[in-house]
Length: 215
View 1 (cartoon, one colour):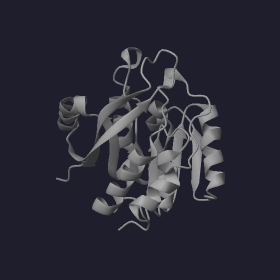
View 2: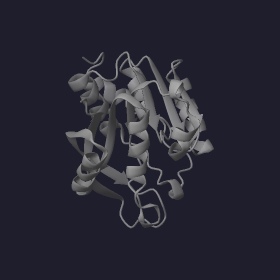
View 3: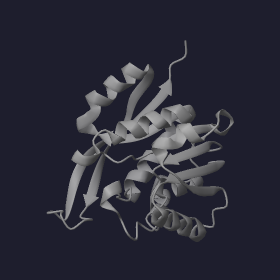
């Protein structure tokens, strides 16, 4: 079970600072606090994959999911982020929450399998809200997911557009992993960059659970 009530948990996450300088090339959007709260709460209450676990957060940004995992009792949390400005945002949030069991590593997520030894791949749970993939960045969400599966000992939890559900399910079959949509979320994407025409856009998002199939 979760060590916090959902309402209290979401209120805490509302104080996590967002990107100070979001970069469009990385598709940087802070995971909304209500999305993060419901996703992590579902992961913990349905599968007990946060409390007491070693958690990896890929493409962590300013640390919404990492901070949330720590607040729900993760043993240790490591965030991985390519952008040095976002790494500083992450560390600032950890200081504000006085978290000493969370760290952020500046690295390219897509190169992690080549840089980590087998002994370093000791994460129980991997969580990620990957870039959804623009026309210039098509397929990056699946590439992030592939890395996550290579690093998780127990399970991967990843958010993907509901519109891509059939594609994600096809990839899971191809990779021979068990895949289940455990929650359907509404992602309110705020106007972040100059080219955005609307104040916000509502996007339907699936929270997936992936695990290796046992023989």
